[in-house]
Image (cartoon, helix red, strand yellow):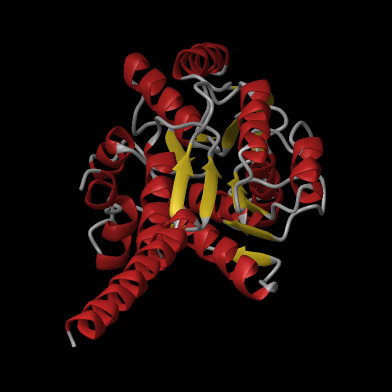
Length: 327
């Protein structure tokens, strides 16, 4: 009897040990999703990161977040993608710094059986499984409509562009120009060929130069966070906030304060938290089911002094970044 009981105990112990090995095997094969932004410092990218983390926790997958130090460093972003390919990630979610420079490396990922989700900014290729982003052209037209609403009889307008090669901002700029023709065909576009660049310092210099050159400007559109921030600072330095109507894209603490005190007439607000969340969910869905929507629009909204305290707009202006990144 003692030998029989000992034998049963040994069998149960062995079965438990096998169960532990199987559990650890599952843990070892948890899906790994690389999320590669254009940069890591701006509120927009932190919001994408937070959304990606939320999706990862809900789906029990691992998110590996890494982006270039500068939003102009295309080669570093290419190297990051190559590194994740060599690490055999299960999927990659990428916000391309340049619509052309990342084409080859995205194709390389596909050849290695790694599906790529493009987010935020487009790619001149079809070697990806889904595009999760704002309708940036629509956002640009939304900004044109807002700017024409707040301008008076005189409509001398400046477009300060962001950076060549950035598909998202190029589409915003095109949408703005088309919208300006539609909503204010009498407007005088006095400058549209200057670029702010990827840093706040370069943007500030470009903004100051434009304000010095065109002292009679009535309204200005800037297509992203840094260019809007740079122009706001230049307007503040020259004492022309409020007099010159500024409409921008995206938000941060300073831009929200500018909207609140009337120094900014409007901000086109994306939903980067939702973008990061859906990018990871889409990647997992593709791995598990093999089918996803090719285009997922995450929406764009116009924040103004009048509506910024409404519940939906307040959540968009203040996404729950700290809740997901600082736990």
